[in-house]
Image (cartoon, rainbow, N blue to C red; front, side, top):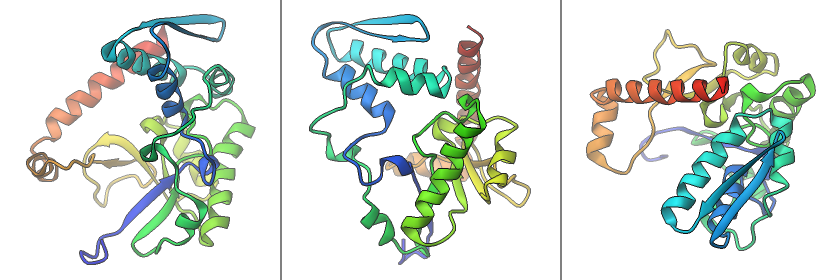
Length: 235
C-alpha cells in the first residue's frame, strides 16, 4: 500500500480488541459447526428455534439462518440470547481480533483505524440512547485512546442503517460512514452513507467491478437481499 501510495481504513469492533474472543456471528457459527449431530436449539424473544444438523450443508444453512434471526431482534435481546452459545475454545487464527499493540503500531497515513461499533451490533436495532452511546460513542472513545488520534470513520455492521443513523453518527463526531450498498463514490456522495465495492482475489472479477460492468448485477443482488431482509422484519 505504501509503494502504491494507497490508503485504507481498518474498521475495528472495539470491545473485542485484546481479548481472546470472536465477533458474535463467528461465535454462533463455531457453536453450530462444532455441535454434535442432532438438534441444535436456542430461544430468542420467547421463541425456540431448532435446527437438525448432520452434515456441512445443514450446518451452513443453520448458521446463516441463526445469524439472520439474531440480526432481526433488538440488540439487548441479541446479547441475552448469545449467552446460550458457548464461548469458543481453540479459536482459529483467522477469526482472532487484532491486539491493541497492533492497532497502535499502524501508520495512520497508510492504514487508519475506524469504528465498527463496540460489539458489532446491528445499528438499526439499537433502541435506547444508552445503546447508541455505548455502540457509537464509547467505541469511538475507546479506539481514540488506543491510537491517540480522532476516530473519524465508521462502518455499519452488515451494512445495516436507516435515515436516522447518519445524524446520530454526526452527533458523535464521525465524518464518514461506509455501507454495503454497491457503487462508486464521487463528489455528490453522502459522506455518512458511502457506497463500496467488495474486494476479490479474482482479477477478472476485480476488473469487472472497478470498470462498472458488474454494477447492474450487484445492484440487483443487493435489491433482492434487501427485500428479503425487509420481508423478514415484517414477519
